[in-house]
Image 1 (cartoon, rainbow, N blue to C red):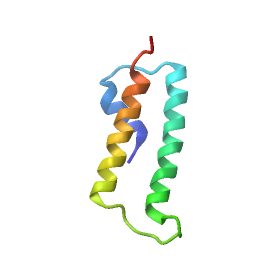
Image 2 (cartoon, helix red, strand yellow):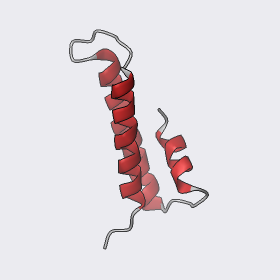
Image 3 (cartoon, rainbow, N blue to C red):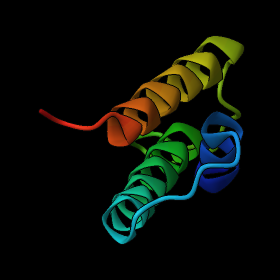
Image 4 (tube, rainbow, N blue to C red):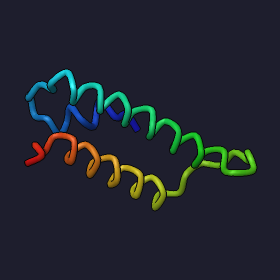
Length: 73
């Protein structure tokens, strides 16, 4: 799962502001940690994420990126 690739797919050619790019970098770190936790678990036993875990993670990532792209009022 690549945060920047997913964002690029959602952006459709739009560019991010410097602040949005900073937020996207923070999301990248957040999701890298979540993937690591899924892969290694709390007891550091390696396993592949289930399809459901991967789908849930991607759905949350898409929601977080969309929230980032939505101007706050």
